[in-house]
Image (cartoon, rainbow, N blue to C red; front, side, top):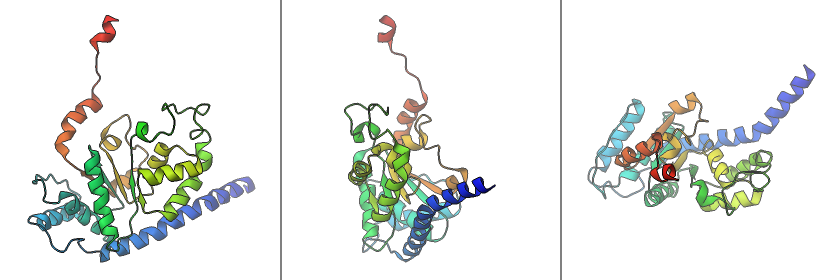
Length: 253
């Protein structure tokens, strides 16, 4: 019993700083999300209707499909009501899913715009492994990569450091802290997704059965919103995700 008691106390002591950080941040986030206003002087035509529709959908736990012209401001019109839902206790996390780098940047800019209006929110952008890997080859083996070797010995300190000091956690920020703490930048970004309020990433991280974020608990899923940008792209991407390919060249060899 004494050994177990010592073990449990050590676990709690190690976990407490992280839990306290998240608890304090979420209180600030919820308070600021209730107070923050629409980050532009006025709504464009159709924006207010779209934002209201998104908020109603979240509060009723339904699904919404939107067809809207380019230039209406869909990104801010969907992210703003989602942020407001934090303060009302409807949500705990947002995933903004996109297929293109340019729309990923638009989402980052929208979050930054609301931050400049007083919003306290932490956002993480996940970049593909082959793009952020520090090594010449993406071989995640401890004898090849010093960022993979001993990863779990250093990751807790790395997460505490970045979450305590940064709000915009994009590729540049992740690479900076990954080098500082000698951790794999890709795995680092995946682990940070569980501490973030908003996660901006490719469709794959939710829909692809091989790489999706399976670590989310069921109760977390119930308080998580998926905003799928340009959903028409999911048709072809979905086929790629769940289909196998046969290559004639390999048979001929």
